[in-house]
Amino acid sequence: MAIKILTEHINVPGIETLEVYRKHGGYRSVEKALKTMTPDEVVEEVKTSGLRGRGGAGFPTGMKWSFLAKPEGVPRYLVCNADESEPGTFKDRWFMEHNPHALVEGMITSSYALGANTSYIYIRGELLFVLRILEKAIAEAYAAGLLGKNILGSGYDLDLHVAPGGGAYICGEETALLESLEGKRGNPRNKPPFPAVKGLFASPTVVNNVETIASVPWIVNNSGAEYAKIGVGRSTGTKLISASGNINKPGVYEIELGVPVEEFIYSDQYCGGIWKGRELKAVVPGGSSVPILPKNLILKTAAGEDRLMTYESLSDGGFVSGSMLGSGAFIVFDEEQCIVRNTWNYARFYHHESCGQCSPCREGTGWMERVLHRIEHGHGHQQDIDLLVSVAKQIEGNTICPLGDAAAWPVAAAIRHFRHEFEWHINHPKEATAPGAVYRGQLDAVTA
Amino acid sequence: MHKMAETTNEVKFSEAAMAEIQRYINHYPEGRQKSALLPILHIAQAEFGGWVSPEVMDEIARILNIKPIEVYEVATFYTMFNLKPVGRHVLEVCRTGPCCLRGADQMIDMLKQKLGIEEGETTADGMFTLKPVECLASCGTGPMLQVRETFYENLDSEERLDAFLEMMRQKEVETPVWKK
Image (tube, rainbow over the protein chains, first blue to last red):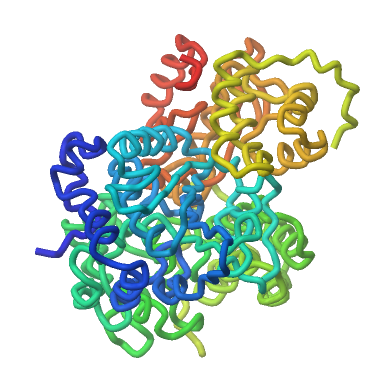
């Protein structure tokens, strides 16, 4: 039976209450860390665990924590990134909604490790109903002496607050998030300086994803070495996968990293296969920003090896024949779906969400949306495909933050793997735009 | 951006709203009360009929001791804040890819047809405003939409959509927990 680190008790009735949560082992890591470990010892366990940022970037968490500057007399902050806005991703929402105390516990233990005495959970504004749930849990924790002054008599003080956003995907980028938390427009900052040196209120700050922080208590309770035993290679531990699209069983699944992709798609334990008796066409394995892959390349690498749900395996082949685990938002397309329409939809999203600071992103996302719109609606030109590739290339790497890259990658990947479908729209617009039209033509083999 | 009218500062938050505003201000260090701006905009929107006017924004600026432009620039950046009057129920419908794989495009078209309005418009009886939005972190239960703080999910048939609209027609405006 696969191990459940995050979701073991999530279905227990009343787990959102302190009483039931504590009965099932909740807040043990706070006792253990605050009473028997130094902050540095906690950081060491997280380093040993191999835990990587679960928001999408996959950066080693222990390493990020060790970068935190510690000047004398300057407050440090831990900020939880609960902005979850990457299309296809809903694991953090689901987790906080059903198991809020697990995040609160993680915040306390992690704040202790980082020497933060005030921490924030920044949650997207659309999830105010989840903010209410979190604030209720936090109030229970204060009442029980798990937050506030001298927690459990340890001498450690911590205040924890929830801060809502206002509707902006860009505020999932850590520096834009900090701008928003300071009451400003979500414009990303230039780095350096990094938040670890100059973050919230110009003070040293660590920003971590919900799932990353929620993974810390188990690591403290069981040791980093035990966590590192789970998974494959540098993909240790478990991951929450948000499975959506044309599958029989959409939902959030906690998997041990290393499950084969084919099993994840077809097993009744997970997605349960493609709905309506249809065939698989494509998958976006890690959120809208990562390359879309056709059926043959999502199930196996270009070299013919089985793809696994790990950072390394999904990145095998780079962007030529691979993709990324990203946020773990696994979006599945059946044979009737239009790749062109989907690419336009994503392009519209990024254009809408661009903060506007950088010309390549602000203008480039607009061009990609408009060109894709005309291809999808039967007015595409012969040169449009190469134009899209060219625009995507000119955005990539030329922006303050990764939103530009995130907008460019899906367009480049869709054209790389599904060029013939785009050509069909351009060369046969009447056919392609007829109601219920489905592309039944050739799907590309990958060329290097 | 339209020219802001001269304001008369006759806007007054209720006691409950002011208490909630102060609660958020207290979350931040001394001198950092501007951090409470986004939570206050949400409170203001719930307090004043689902949108924020220049007068409301000026009052927020006064409360936080910041300049009005600092409120305007934030209210215009974040998509959740409505800057002109809206209907009783603003239907914030997810229009992003994963929901479209489950029929969101068709649902949005149906809503336009049934309500007789386009994106951004309000029905003549003032009941519904149609506001397509981006991914709401509900991809496993799409197609779906949000009205105030509540998510309405799995609207995957015309029957369910009709039942939802009928229910909303009978429903009062949702009040946030701090106003109860």
